[in-house]
Amino acid sequence: MTLNAAFHCGAVRFTVTLSDGVNTARRCDCSLCAMRGAVAISAPLDGITIQQGEDNLTLYSFNTHVAQHYFCKTCGIYTHHKRRSNPTEYGVNIACLDGFDPFLPAVDVLDGLNHPQDGQAMHRRGVLRFEADAP
Image (cartoon, rainbow, N blue to C red; front, side, top):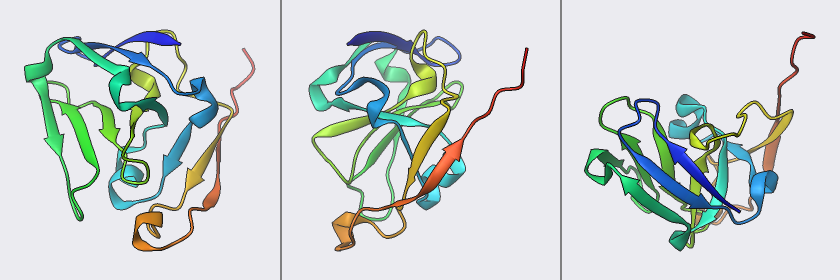
């Protein structure tokens, strides 16, 4: 499944080939992800192709510097990151994908504070739920 994607400002456009559609949707509770608040879905490392605006991407990395988080220099939107828990994949901000509603009914929240790369078992902290009001 290959989709078009863009930042809020439109400065960066890219295509994404997803690993398993929205079945990989998740949030993380590490210090960055908790503040960022995005739902991420998985793509292989060769699954993202920047179509325009690559020079408008900026990189943020912290702590172990294994995870690499990419943002737009203009609007600040997070698009994707190289995953620390699985360095063969990117996590992609579902809200950047054309035609995808980021408000999924239920999204697993994973324990990123006790990271599997630090010898901890990966486990779910809970579920983030969205209930839409009736029209």
